[in-house]
Length: 515
Image 1: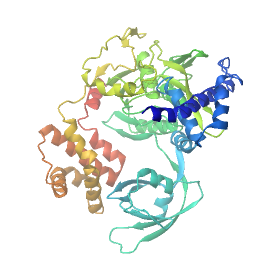
Image 2: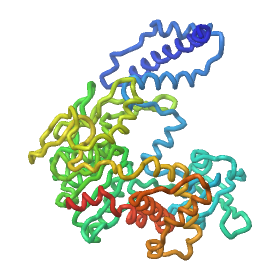
Image 3: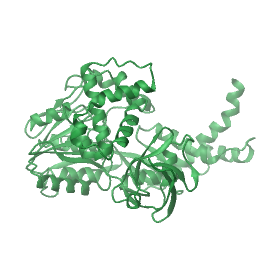
């Protein structure tokens, strides 16, 4: 063991040394008040680096050690300062910018083959006639069926620069021969708005899945449509929304707040305090609104929820949000990679810090904390600070946004029992097969009347004789709703999916009651 430790000591020294060089290069090239921390040319770290370069017995991979060193540095700072290498940065930027170059299909991997869930409306694949249920078996003459391909492998093959071509071979139901397509990649939108619909004659519903570069435009288009449909009250669903761009959160908040109302402010050790205010009369300033949140709502979602709660503009319903209130600035490095460095904290208008507590270097405990919240069954959180809104309502600090009305985790459902259906992909496989077999004949009304649960039980029993369906009535109802909604999504799209999924949703039921 001692011999093994000695063998790796030089590499450990090199990591420490490169850390010093990187800190020096990074900090000396920034002009934001932190350049006083410098690594001198003649420091011991540089001496060690020269020794390793000249005398170390084995060859090393400098790039790999460099990236490991960077990640080690940032891990010691806070949970959200991160390094993104050149391979990943393009994909990360595409997700936030709201589009990418590709063929335009939603896909899933079923039975070791790439299945088209649906072609994206207006995309290259739809224009060529590729259909839901098609199986992609060839990409540029390479067999991609039955080889154990994963999602990233599909993305790597189908995405590319706009205007470039990719050949795909399609196996279609009831067609004996493979159908060949040459697809010119186009700009494919990544939507941040999952659905917009009217829940009642006067209550609209909008669900946002992130805050990307297109969120404001999507939100305004949805709002105009719902207003024209008679919307007088709105449920804004931010459950599971991990956040995104600060400006998009400000834009959305702006639509609900009168001019001059504070939305959020930021403070940092080497950054001046910045305050952001509503700068115009928004479209929805008089509309009654409820915001739905849970432990998956983070960052920009928390800014919106906090701004509306602190300004007495909305009731917040759900569970305490994640508590991600650290501001990252994206700083490019010479090779095209970036460092996202935490420089400030977010605060709500009443002065609550959104960031939950953390210990430096203990990221695992920080990220697992959210799973310990099942014990929370009251609004008041231990050790929270109490703040007061302009109308005298108490709101709570201590990390995250605490809702006005708690919707506790549903303990009636056996989460372990339910998760097996999703984990083994049984629900997806069944729903896709069912939709595929009835694609030409099944109507919405027929789907709502069919006993899809019994069909699902038969499907699972054909796969395994070991699973026992000992579900209670609530679990059966929950499972049937999930199945019916998923079949509906495959056949009729997201709006039909959510119209079923939101039925007897405890968050939505409470929101409607408040409206």
